[in-house]
Image 1 (tube, rainbow, N blue to C red):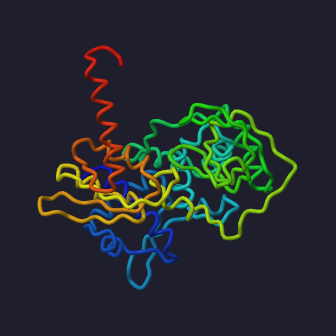
Image 2 (image 1 turned 90 degrees about the horizontal axis):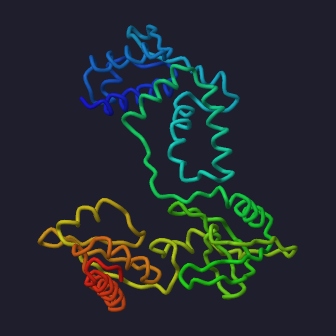
Image 3 (image 1 turned 90 degrees about the vertical axis):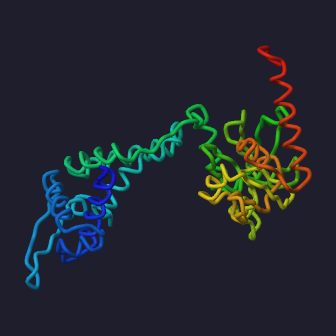
Length: 331
């Protein structure tokens, strides 16, 4: 049996015993975990050896296993042992927030949780990291943007306008704008401001790390009562905004399985083809982001509609091909 399965099962045993006020017999645990009773006894013994305060008592002629909730007695919060352990274990999932005040506060919280948990529980969690770990590759170091991010949060909470010097990556230019920051939005390792831009007279997104200067104004704003950030972002294939476009993309059998594995967009529909391929359909905002998504799949993806997206993908491929026709020379 894989070690990951064993640790996962032991975690479920801890959670089940914590949730049960009267404990549970080993046979009942085995039924819930879909394994043999002998396997449960081995897991219970392993947990006892790891230092978990398991004990048994007779109830209606059966031996019930229970666990002392030491964590709850030490923590002045309504958290049980497995909730504390899960909170501590989740720290690796938040590495993308490094360099922000949020991450610093979370680090302090995790240290308090660690101090609350008995050493043997921490050792058990360290074992779990051998079978489950969150990998973080590309992310933005926000250390140098801490002050700007703090100012953005302050302005959004107090509903005050901000004046920013913003660098547009697409146009490669710096512009000055006054915006009403409705909300801070975190997506794909990037902090964005969703707010009304007076320069463009529209609700726009601004990447926090592209703000070069920021001043909080004395003027206040009131966001529209019917504005919903989640609904505003729903049509985007990522973060870009644009006119709604109905797209249809055919995926070859070799890559169709990867497409089925995820929910790529809330409006998507997948139609399986006779050869094992599939057709992906969705209504998205603009074509820029989905163009890059199509290119990611190489020859395994073919745009069926709209024609503007087909042309955009074709032109990108033609440009790439032209670059490589230069041989070893850079274009």
